[in-house]
Length: 421
Image (cartoon, rainbow, N blue to C red):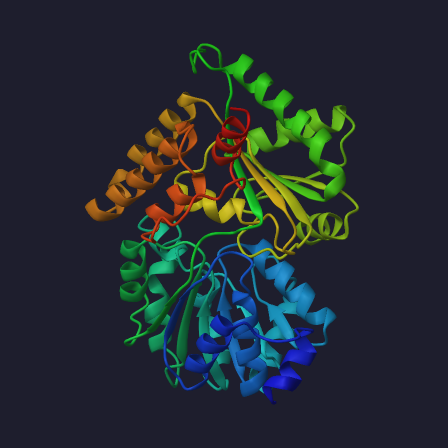
């Protein structure tokens, strides 16, 4: 299929320069690592690769939500795509395996765990595989012994194939250290590396301290209530303009906040790893039937719902890199959007405790990287003067560049202060 025909089927007018460059490298069989901001069209690159080559492309995704969302959109465009996971009925799984064998499938979405499935590996032995694409590739570094170990077995999976396919790795957030680890763990062959800027010019960043002066453990209930009040205030101010995602760091908090928002009269849905009817929950949110999604980080990475105009973090992520990923769910349609971080100092104590608890599962370098990322998010939240986008760019090894003027709360307040002098 020609590039023009592939673009038409995907409903894309044209590819951006970065997308074209990365696609060209993959087409000639050159392993590639693409570091592009959320909303830059990473998924379109490997979807184009499948259509242009007319061969099967395997995409490894960390969460079922990503598979469901991507496959739904591709099928609506008439593109032969499927997902294979443990939740599929047996008959549906047999159908997908048959499509792999007869060569009718173009895009197959799987989790790293599914790559180890014997029936899938058997079906792939005779398949015409055009590439193995690792979406959200930074997850390879975040996982390890005792938790999602199959991320560390992707390179071994490649060795089971009849021919080595071209390998592509895609992420919006990778420090220089993460970049090296991705390449090593995937055993990439002298990869082409494209590093774009992490800046999203249409997202306004802000951080709000909740419960200043209150002790975290002693006043936990008061702090929680104030967070809910602030979330309700933000929703009343922002929700008519589009959809909203609210991230919580535990399933318990997701359920509690959903109940709270329902009582306040908000149309709300929830999403977490063990929830039922994932496809229906995503459909309701994507269609606008409900405009608020309360979720753990099981929702988000790569989910392409363009009309998200507000992302609220009930509490901080496990690091600045994770936060940037999740905040990047906002504004994928290019319209002005906002990402708000609610925090209390005790939130960072809790997150540091979680990392310390996992220290036996991390190497010295990995543990230091995670603690550095968490400390960077803490500085980001507490900073009341510096441009937040400059803080983020510096963390990811970019040039700091100019202040954003009004795309973060600090610059907005600084501009107004000068204007009022």
